[in-house]
Image (cartoon, rainbow, N blue to C red; front, side, top):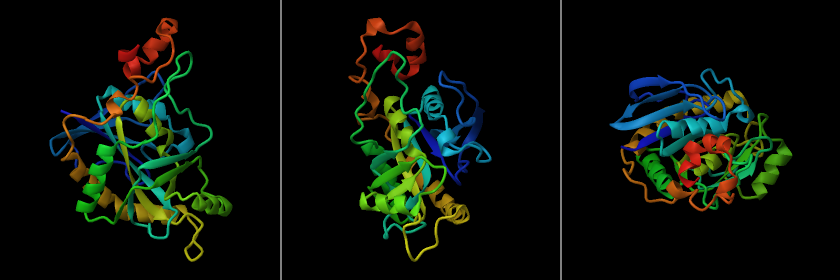
Length: 284
């Protein structure tokens, strides 16, 4: 049976429909995850939920231990991850309250560790298409069936934060043609690809950032109010999506590392092999 992971962002701190819940606290070679994992089943499908910012929303975007979060999902046998994230809209037609299922990312982060590799092991995974096409299609269809106003496709620009954009930044990002802006999906998506886990994002549009001349500038109060009204819809979308999960993967995510490691295997230390055992052991 496939195991599905959900990483919840601002506003989504639990999965209401999980049954047979078990709280699992893990350690990883890359440190501690954001919180305990909540394992259970939903509609007969094995599920693992993690609050990205920790219970009580204690962790800022740049403080998240993304490597530990993804490694923990891998330890629990997760093969698919749905990321739920609050975002700002950079397009007029993507209104607050709408959902977006992006298929591209643009990385504007500055201080985050974006890989499991390094320290003696070099690997370069393909990331031209950063979202699993199968998971992306499934999530978009589920959003439509749940009655959400959903935009399928588009670019998610990931900024460093934790401050929101300046007006100048927001206007420049608009000229780049991006669709939404957030603070958390990078390096999360990159690490999921290195871990050979399928990944797709359900982005909840909460505001127009600060570029929109006739709307109020973004504030945390406005963001949280929109998020609260959309969490129930997000829960319905995820429940619909997991009931249609394929039992066998046919995408390329499952073999993303097959030709990615360039380092001569004879030079890789025992310590590095142990650190990477779960991520890349079959290739070392």
